[in-house]
Every structure is written in structure tokens, then in C-alpha cells.
Amino acid sequence: MSDAKDWPLWEVFVRAKGGLSHRHAGSVHAADAKMALEHARDTYTRRMEGVSLWVVPSAQITASDPADAGPLFEPAEDKIYRHPTFYSIPSHIKHI
Amino acid sequence: MYTTDLSGKNAKKPEAAAAEDPVLLATFEARVANDEFIEPKDWMPEAYRRTLVRQISQHAHSEIVGMLPEGNWITRAPNLRRKAILLAKVQDEGGHGLYLYSAAETLGASREEMIDALHSGKAKYSTIFNYPTLTWADIGAIGWLVDGAAIMNQVPLQRTSYGPYARAMVRICKEESFHQRQGYELMMAMMAGTPEQKRMGQDAMNRWWHPSLMMFGPPDDKSPNTEQSIRWRIKRETNDELRQKFVDVTVPQAEAIGLSVPDPNLKWNDARGHYDFGALDWEEFYAVVRGEGAVAKERMTARVKAWEDGAWVREAARAYAEKRAAAKVAAE
Ligand SMILES: [Fe+2]
Ligand SMILES: [Fe+2]
Image (cartoon, rainbow over all chains, first blue to last red; front, side, top):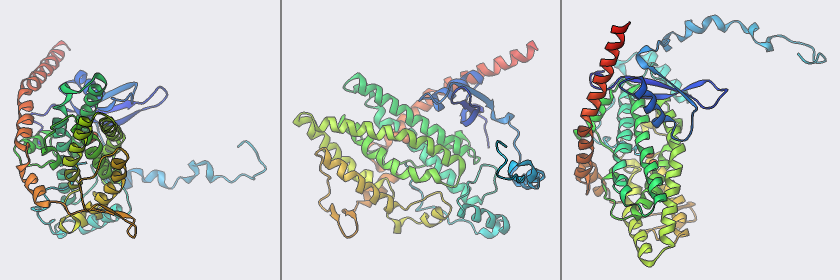
């Protein structure tokens, strides 16, 4: 995909309000980080959807391959004892 | 909206699925049938990718070109309140275009390619924007009818199978509701005004009603890609189903403010539980698709001019960023 003339792509993360994590909102093209923040504001927070923005060059993101999702997440599959529901406790025992 | 597949008529038949790994294909079809979302790096058939790029970019182009007929009235809005509202709406449409271009980019289309395709006339956009906005009442008619039709089309697409497209649609639908309400409120004001204002309101209704109904695209029996698109969940209801829904909800809204619907064949059908309405002029529709709309040339000229006039800004910003990056490296 020739990106020769397009400005680089940035991924935008928005914190909706204090106490919440930043969450991926979408992406913008911008020449540099400062412009990416401005474009992110105009594109993704026109209705006060956020109190804080992160922009990350899309090229800097390393992603796992969905085709490998099976083997990648397999180690967690058979460890049901990591969940509280694995343990049966008599119902008269309270606060546990 | 503006999601009607306008190139359907000449679209190539999807390539024989045999060219693709049958196991991957079966897994894909099963996931989609199960209403799972497909995400950018997931395996997908080439025809699915191609159809989506075309549909999403066409949709993005429509949002962008859609700024022109309304932008044309910003300086002539009758008061500051209306001006601020119209400005915000037009800015939203620009935002919608950007969400959608980004979604198409996740499929491997570059922004530049898409914009080139629009400017060279290779890519289509919704026919509705090739009609002129002659009076202020047209701004009301567009918000109410055109954005109303868009909402009807877009709501089901919030559950479309391609994740980035579905997420863009969720965001867009949230914003469209304001567009439609401000348009209807504007029409209400016109219809509660002087006889001259009422006449303008009705005139806008007369000109925008049929083009709005055509926004849903050709009738189902003339819409060759519908079946595959529905199976792939990139279309969730047929053109005729959506059109009927739109007529059913919109007619009472028109009547409530004293507008008459310009269709002598419009009649409530008790047995069907729907309005019956007259046939649409599809020759006109195809003529507009071919670029023969009243202001098609004007629209593209305005787009290309804006793009070319902005070229030096894009280049200067890039050069500045490169210079600063180089200076930073030198300082380290
Ligand atoms: Fe829009
Ligand atoms: Fe809109």
C-alpha cells in the first residue's frame, strides 16, 4: 500500500473520564505527534467524549497474529482452577 | 448512509471460491453466519475484502461530498443559532468521512488511492448530493429526509460483520440523530411561518422526497449483489425493505407539520400494514449515477479544488515534521 504521499497513520486512544483506561477510538493521519493530537481531538472528541488522548504511530504497534490465536492462548485454556467458581464451598459458609 | 452499492451493475462476479483455501473459506463463512465480527488481520475472502473496500470508501466519499450542498448555505444561515448548528453538522459529516476512510484503510486501501479514485470519477458517491440546494428550506429537507434515510440505512450496519466498519457506524449513528432532528425542527419552523416560508418548505419537500427514496438504491430485483452481501452481513436488510420502513415513519412526520407528500399514489394499506407508494423514476437515478446530476460537475470541481489548494499545506507540514525529526536525531 503506497503511503508515499499520505501523512503517517496514528492510532488514537481516548480516556472517557478520570478513573477509566484509555480506549482505542480509531486512527488519523498527521504529519507529526502534535498534529495527530489535534486531529484526534477534532475527529474523536467533538462531544466531550474524552478528557485525555494518546496517539501512537500505527507502525509502532506490534500485534499478535489472529491465525496463531489458538496456540497463543492455549496455555490458559485448561487452567479452570484460576477461576473462583472452580471451588465448591458449602452454602452456609458466608462472605467467601 | 450512502451505502448503496452503486457499481453493482458492472461489478465483476465474485471469483470462484475454489481459488481460496476451502477450509479457511468454510471457517470464515461459519463465523459470519454465526454473527461473529471479522477483524482486520483475520483471514477473509478476496471478494469480501474488495466489496467492503468499495462499499466503505463509497460511503466515506458520500460523507465528504455531502458537506458541499450544506456548506454552501453556512454563510447564508438566517441567524447565529442556525449557523452554529449547520456548521456543527457539516463538521460531523467530515468526521464521518474520516472514520470511514480509516475503516477502509484497515483493509489495505490507502487514503491517497481512495481520494484519487473519487477525484478521477472512478469511485461513486451517493446520488443525492448531485441535486442542488436552492433555498434555505432545502437545509431542513436534507437534515430530515436525507439524514433520515441515512439513519435508516446505517442502523442495521452497526451489526455488520466487519468490526472496524461496525464500530464506525455506531459512532456515526449516535451523531446522525442530531442531524435529523435539527432538519425537522427547521422544517417545523418553516411550516409555522409566513405563507412564503410554507411555500418554500413544500417546494423543498417536493424536490427532495423522491431522491431521498432513491437513496436506498435500486429495487431488490435489480440489485445483483444483495444476496451475497446479506449473507456476508455487510448489508443487513434489502433496499426495498429499508425504503418501505422509511416511507412508513416519514409520512406521518410530514403530515404532522402540514407538508404534503408529492406522490398521488401514496396510500395507507391496512392489509399490508404499510404505505403503498408510487413507482420511482429509476432512469433518473441511473443518469445521476452516471454523473448527469444537476450539479455533479460542480461538486467534483469543488472537491478537487479544495484538495489541490490544500496541497502546499500538506507538503509544508510534512517537510516541517521531517526537519524537526532530523534536528532531534542530530541533537541526540
Ligand atoms: Fe453522516
Ligand atoms: Fe448526517
